[in-house]
Length: 423
Image 1: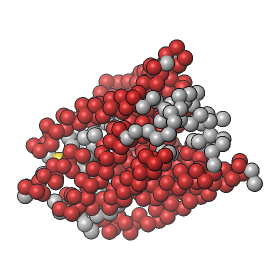
Image 2 (image 1 turned 90 degrees about the horizontal axis):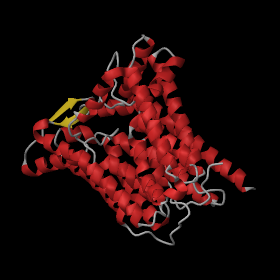
Image 3 (image 1 turned 90 degrees about the vertical axis):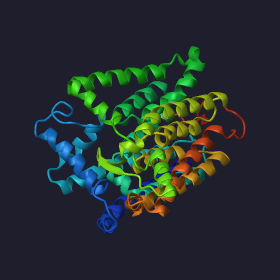
Image 4 (image 1 turned 45 degrees about the vertical axis):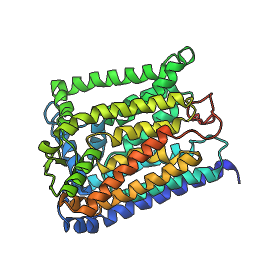
């Protein structure tokens, strides 16, 4: 049996399992939502709610309205086609839900293929199966979020950009990262380690990837303003004006302090999420962006200091810096890390996968489990669990950035995967 046949069989098996996860999760959502509602607030954030949200946005375009210009739209410009395309294919809401989940499944398949090819043509099939197994486990644990949100799309663009940028396809990687940035900002963080790499070898790299990235973003922003006019600024201000989300590192810490001191931290429902009331969280919210920037700079410095040989590890850290230190830490954000953590190698990677597994398990208790509603009711156990999840993510970040690299340094490719060029 040839390696190509084994690789195809392994990939197709993973795709089949993921199809079962999608179908099974959708079938069990009604019971899960009913159970969640018994514990308190559940409408905002449910899978059906998010699908309705996307459906209404897409329907507005079919009614002749222009996003940003005629109605507020809080996501970057390239996220809108993700909502619109399924709506162009169907008319009623229930059919839209199936079409949207099918669209997300296609991105899931793309992620599986990219992970399967990550190690190049000479990698053992057992290693491919292990990586796909971890990715599948993460998807299973957060399955309601996987099928209910559009995070798989920016996740795939971020992972593809990272892989191509660091495997002799810098221009393609830069363009992909730019397109991802115009979809949900997050894929842009892969440019940080790439900048360090290209800047250290300007004679050979000629900053091709960074030029492609910046050019793509600039062209996209121009189209964005052409479509939405000055109302685009309202979309940007939407996120700037948000406070601390309850699940964030800062929000969880405030709830823990409140539990210890006997004070109930007030929360408010706005921006379609639950936030700490401004009287408690406004000053901390101001610190979030600078802390994200410092964390990303730490990733870039750690990457440079390591010899730039372990790209996947520092790319995962870059994504994590954006997630864990922001003022918003919605549970679906963990999806962005799935492929980056799944492909990590050596003992550090093995420990990282297990830490992230615990973070996913605790997140599952909050969504679709009853934990989040209990946090809003100021129950000590769930608040401790929320902070445990956040501490796990901080621990994972610190380990990825500061643990010494094992084995020999590989200088040719910063990703440490010499044969990872996509055919």
